[in-house]
Image (tube, rainbow, N blue to C red):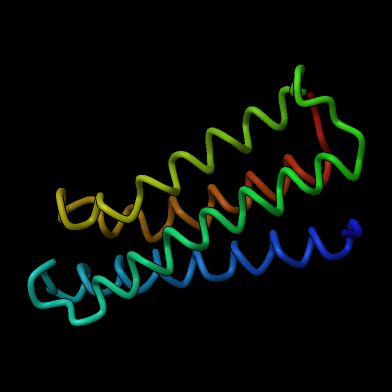
Length: 123
């Protein structure tokens, strides 16, 4: 597949990931619980599929730009760390309700940092 196709797949996964996280976070901020969220299971499924799509698209992009899988540059490690944090973020608002509001700011900031890392590849 082409670079553009992998890039599209990667961005599509990111869009769905942030939709799932945003829906969960806003539900908890508005006083909802895990038990009364009719969309909890669909959002969790969307989140998991989005994580897989991001991973496939990201590794496809790495292959297209010629990054050796044996020695990742530092910016790739940074993006992988952010990917892990965003993967865990779906459970945090339900477990620690008071973190839901800070997560509404932290999640987009993590996305911005991941974007910055991809564009500028600083290390």
